[in-house]
Amino acid sequence: MAAYASAMLTPTVFELRDYTCRPGRRDDLVEMFERLFLDAQEAGGAHVSATLRDLDREDRWLWIRCFENMASRRRALSAFYTSALWLKHRAACNATIKDSDNVLLLKLHASSVLRHSGASVGATAIPRSVFALDTYFPGDEAKFAAAFTRYALPALGAANATPIATFATEHAKNNYKRLPIRDSETVFVALTRFASQAAHARAQHALAASPDWVKAQRALARECIQPSEHRRLQPTPRSSLR
Image (cartoon, rainbow, N blue to C red; front, top):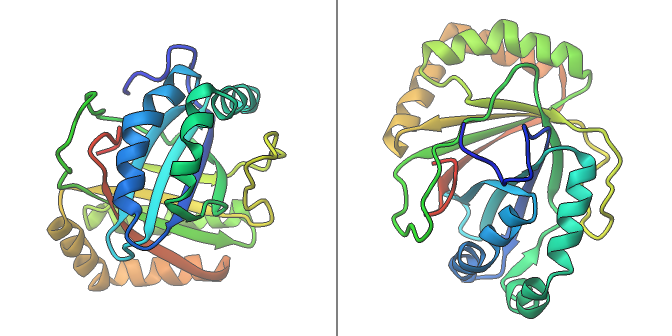
């Protein structure tokens, strides 16, 4: 596992932050974030696990930020959003963003481990890898998790599409009110890495042809209150997940 910020032990709290950018401004936001804000957050106790462009919606940018616990989340966010760096550049940053309130507070599910390959300071090449982000909306968390483990994981493994990590809703109360979260929803999130867009397409084709996956989808749908969401995401140059 890649090193986290020096003040952080194993993270237990994750923010999945899904931003809608203003037309034509996503690349401006990514460049500004990686140049100005990424290292500052790491120094303050927040680890930026991933920054990802949506391959199918040119106005969407998603990033994952994690913390040792809820108390360290409050300290890290308070330090960053009152810092001279943020106060100096926040207007320019916010000018690129249409909506930043689409945020889920998560925890790693069961024994899931999120491993990072890391990127060096100053990295500029866009990785070829693709991440699939599948978000489910269970009615009963325990029943859904059991169905996912029993039915979905074997079918996904057979199609070379085993998630690198799964997450469940962190139900702790939001302790940094300046940043809203979607606290009225319960979700289960699977994050899967593919070497390329072609590898992702092959896996999707294999799943579509798999009777076991059809069975798994039916089992999962029975435990959900609304349809799942599937996203194709590509890491930005300095994403730790790549």
